[in-house]
Image (cartoon, rainbow, N blue to C red; front, top):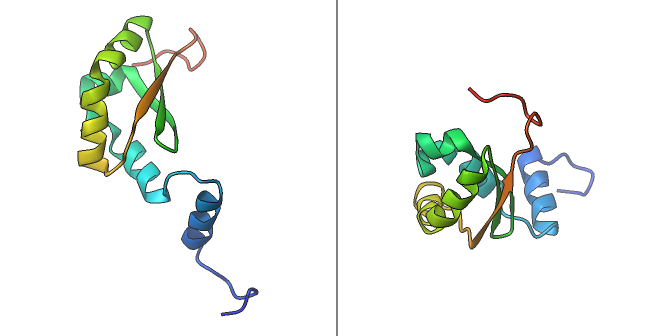
Length: 106
């Protein structure tokens, strides 16, 4: 193959992610795609994953009380993400949603 030959988009994305030292495309997809399965329906209704930067997961909560709850649930969340989505998370950063920023949740 020469440098001018077409390459699959998935390979190109994997190369870009590797160059940025981010998690693999499969890890990110697994985390976001299986979030509710990993954390449960109740947590998923209030906690939304925003990004995975190396082993740091940034989540947004819809209420400050959930920020505290996530701190208590961090060991369970990290273990479940490893089991369900094969994603290693060492730390979770929590952001509280600004009222009206994303609209009302259902």
